Length: 121
Image 1: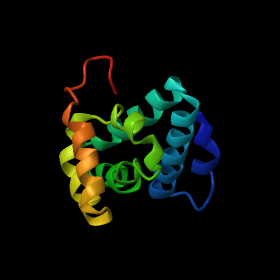
Image 2: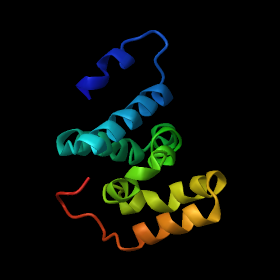
Image 3: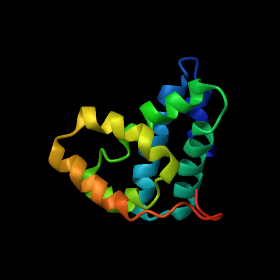
Image 4: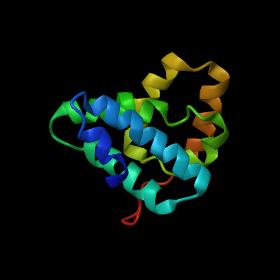
């Protein structure tokens, strides 16, 4: 993610800070309907989620996927980009953060998701 190079090059760099910035970049891309940035942001988070070391998987879950619905107005756009294989692990985090009504709405949005095709994130 060249847009976040400055974040990665600071002495205070951490993967959690990077994922937080990646989350903000994705939210901006949703607002601007920038599919290129969205593909790269969600693709990177998904790649990290599938690394054999749990460190990156946990960082992606806690600092990216847990916060994807923080801008509630973008929930429908965000839902379309979420990989199905991440949902079971991140949903437990959402349960801690949201009221039942909000969680129920997200569940309804995500219920129609099909497994990703080869072209999906």
